[in-house]
Image (cartoon, rainbow, N blue to C red):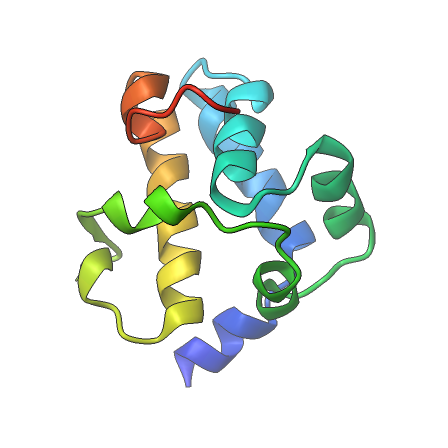
Length: 120
């Protein structure tokens, strides 16, 4: 099943792809890290540790220090699926992350990406 394969993917395997995606669109890794921090509560060293430890996505989200309560405001389509309609919480979180990275890469304003929040 695709969902099982995605759950087992390591954060270390997708983070470099996220970096490439945002840098290709002239955005910075700092912007990427800011949205990941906003979503998960990880800080910079925490993200680096998740990469170094090669944690899978299930563990990455299970150990997230503080999922942002405003993440429920993330809506739209990613991979042909409306993120707000995903019933599997882990898959929804993964797609939220994908959606935020897409928004960074598209050059959306950071205040909009962070759903009006000014916090990291």
